[in-house]
Image (spheres, rainbow, N blue to C red):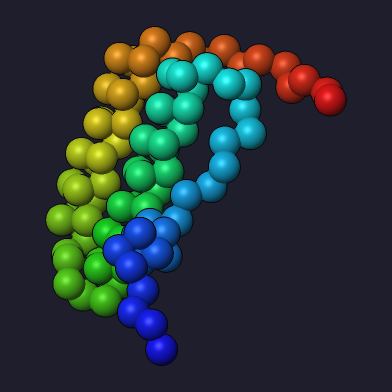
Length: 88
């Protein structure tokens, strides 16, 4: 059996979903940040569930990640207004 290369391992460990929204570079960048946030929160949740982190440590780590995501949204100048979906 062949050894998996690093790219295949990264795709397995850090899966990414396609972006289906309105294409703008800032939206694409925020989507990548949002997926990274989701991935890290999942890991933190698993570590807390298995007893590797206390609930307080998990909360603080997730709170820090949330602040980073909010800062990213602010820096990318993404508004809170929802745009109506476009029909193909």
